[in-house]
Image (cartoon, rainbow, N blue to C red; front, side, top):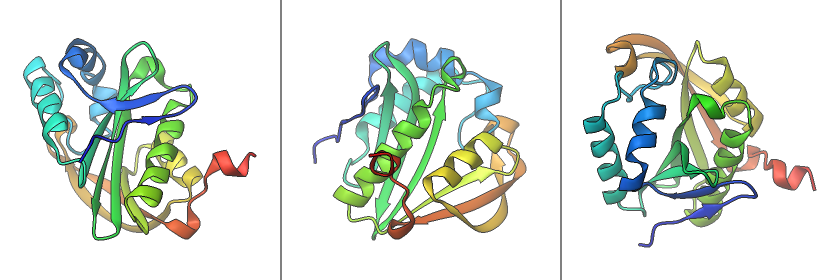
Amino acid sequence: MVFPELKTDRLRLRMIDDGDLDHLVQLANSYAIASMLSGMPHPFTEETARFYISRGRTNDPASVVLWAIDDGTGLVGCIWAKFEDGTGWTGYWMGEPYWGRGYMGEALRTVLRFGFEHRAVTRFEAGVFADNPASSHLLDKMGFSKVGEESIPSKGRGDTMVPHIRLALPLADFVDLAEAES
């Protein structure tokens, strides 16, 4: 299957590549980012970045896609989606210099729309650490609802167990803001 490159008015969601290495290390080597993710270690080294890029390039795009979020200047963050049996899972991060620009909402909305329209997803799931109000707000804005709570380890916090909220978004509840605003 061909890698699904996606575009918005301001962003290109594309395959991550070796040219992203330096910027990936620079942006992802942030405790503020890693501490809000379950699987991102801190520090985020060049070796970690090489593995991340390799994994992103070798995933089967029919089931797992890792997109580099590119604003025209290069990688500014990443978003991924996994598709299986009508369910999609997603997660994301944005480099600190790009916070507050609305990029992640734009990227997430595009990935959700892609999953619902092109991968026969009937429900998306996501998770957020309880102490991450920005991500909680974004998921709420997209129509996600809380379905459970648990504690999971965060590599960025040294595998400390962190309160985690599980959320779901059925297709019927998807708030496609692009359509709502037109």
